[in-house]
Amino acid sequence: MNTIWILDDEPGMRWVLEKALDKAGWPVRSFADGIALKEALDALEGTADPRMPAVLVSDIRMPGPDGLSVLAAVRARLPDLPVIMMTAYTDLDTTVAAFEQGAFDYLAKPFDIQSAVELIARAAQSAPSRAGAVQENQTDAWAVLGEAEMAPSQSPAMQDVFRAIGRLSQSGATVLITGESGTGKELVARALHRHSRRADGPFVAVNAAAIPRDLLEAELFGHERGAFTGAVQSRRGRFEEADGGTLFLDEIGDMPAELQTRLLRVLAEGAFYRVGGARPVRADVRIVAATHQPLEERVRAGLFRADLFHRLNVIRLRLPPLRERREDIESLARHFLARSAAELGVPVRRPDASALEALRRFDYPGNIRQLENICQWLTVMAPSAEVGLEDLPPEILETGAAVVPLQAKAGPEPDDATRPAPGTEAAAAAPRSDWRAALEAEALGRLARRETGVMDALQRDFERALLRAGLRQAGGRRGEAALRLGIGRNTLTRKCRELGLDEPDADQAFGD
Image 1 (cartoon, helix red, strand yellow):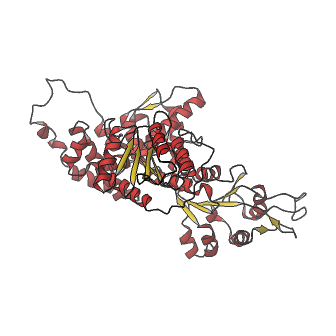
Image 2 (tube, one colour):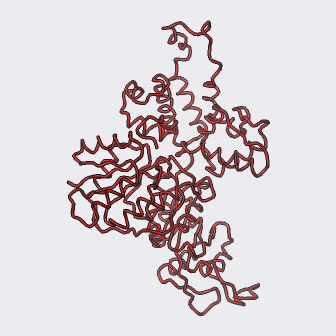
Image 3 (tube, rainbow, N blue to C red):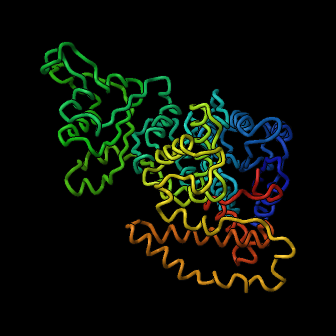
């Protein structure tokens, strides 16, 4: 069995992976930096040494040569070696750059160690010929698309989107993006274009719901002079404008039935006629479509062509609503607040703990767009730089999002004279012990407001409260907290990440 090579400057991470892989029967060789790994590659180059690695697992952020540089060097010398990249800084450009340079997969820290071992085993068993030539363009790990929606994310769902964009970077496949309004579908479409072979070509966006149906055909396909009243000259349509690039068809579910037929023909034949034209026009266009509507239901209702749906639904990316990625709310809010302050030339607003908790608990029916609007409101309306719970806009204060933070708002630490005597803490907390009644009241309130996903939302809040209590009781020591709560340490780490709690302490193995 060939060796698994591990490259990471953190001794704790190397130790954890070494122990887990050794337990699974894999021999392991570890390196603390890219220089040591290069020396090992030099010694093995051109040989059939049985110590040749089966898989390389490399961190991205390290002193000296970073992981992307190491990946490029390894792919140039050992193109068939599966390389798995790992980092605690999960952003779109880093993920895409790793896949563009031929990475087998991408591990976002903190990760479940058993899942990591299973991924390494799959990589070791992968076919030797895989796509992934070395790319000249190395993407800065901190670069984002200029918008916070595509900023580094701790959400597993968004990390899956990042991975998909990376895997699609060398593909021209049609992509269908689904998600609620305000989740950033156009930003993902632009990312797909920017990281594709068509990046030097145009990106043209058309919103099928925003253009009157009697004008949409000419908007898409263009028209000849005299085709209709007011057509005083010929005009290219969006398909022609997007030649050599990407055409983004937003809100495709609202496209009229007659245009669905024309679009289907264009996708099948690659040619179309301008309105009033007699000569076929060809355009080399990649289609990326998006909708907030459930297209399968519209197909069953006869409102959307089934054959067009299957043409568009080659690769589907689902963008999660913001309520499913609450762990990203704080970083997004801080970005929007900083940007709004810079635009207005005022001090940056800083939410206190209670305000941040209320922001995390709010469900954001308008998703990221609504969070941005709230941050703009706070920048204008908050009386001071320090934003308290009472400074939040009515749309948050009038919901249950602000109830728990008000009750949990911390007061001053008691001095020795007022601190309860040992053993009396439980008695002092007795008046607040009827948590089941409070939970039932909260559920009734949400159901009365016709909220959806109540059980999932309350379960997340329940788990978040338990984890916080366990960590507080254990003084932040995750191993001890997991033992007291009766769960595995890896499970605690994963849930902390999913529920938006603080990152592990620096001395934990799953840091960067």
